[in-house]
Image (tube, rainbow, N blue to C red; front, side, top):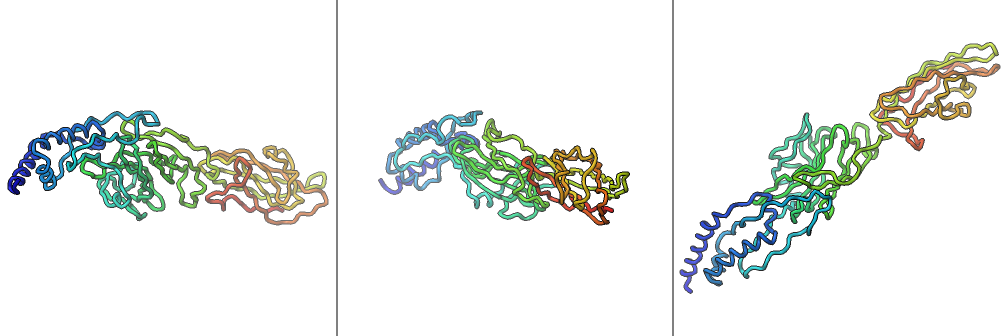
Length: 401
């Protein structure tokens, strides 16, 4: 066959692609992710084999090499995603039938996206919560935490929508000052290979969770996110935050939680005790002793309860507790000294306790004038002391005389 005849056949094949294939309906982004399914590939392979048979093996092979890439054929509608936590069926598409050597094959677009590719693409993010925030439409993620950017903190890959191809899942923060809202977002690729947003997995809130620490995509497509109850910053270290792993699955076009806790218990550090007290003035009693009282006020200005409160009074050992005002103490203050101690029950957020405490100095014992610390500290359920973000207001100095 002459070169002119071969070129003629190439022109005929090009005309076929431009006329016949142009009539083929272009599938949408969701359908293209599934062009690797057996049925779609069999349909395209059958059409291709028929055309190849019309034009002959060697000549058609040459025309196929010099012509542009073929467009994908029609595919089946997007299947409904199972609502169960564990997806049914195989995790990868069934291989299609073999095709004639030298002819192109059809493959489903992969959603696998590297960190560099995600940072280099203009993407659309689900909206941040109301108020001052970062842009969401047609923006580029940032590899650092500059003010006002969408910072890419972590990235993982996995088949999260059950279509047999890999998607990317990213942890992103809108950087505002030392913090800012966070969300985990899944990305895919459309028919042209462009990065598109599949959906939001989870986001932080003003309530809880206030922080997202890590993410992990497991083999069954579950996106596991480590969430924290309170955001670090403003004196609050990250190790004080309670952390939970929660699992999310893509169901019905969006992500829903399928595993892990759904709420947090009280955080022992989320307290702020403020202590005030009056001075102690001792007066002579009929039996020769000296007595007096002080009023102690302890308020919890934090967002969570103190499981217990330890009240410590640094009075001289000769000044002993006296009267019914000590009845609120869980312990026996009479058995404590240096400092005198009163352990109190739970103090809820925004609550306060007011105590009127009596004292007595035995007859013949001399107590001069001095100063003493009155200190209130939160304790957890194990009676261990708990640190607060701000603790200078836990102690007040009084005068005794």
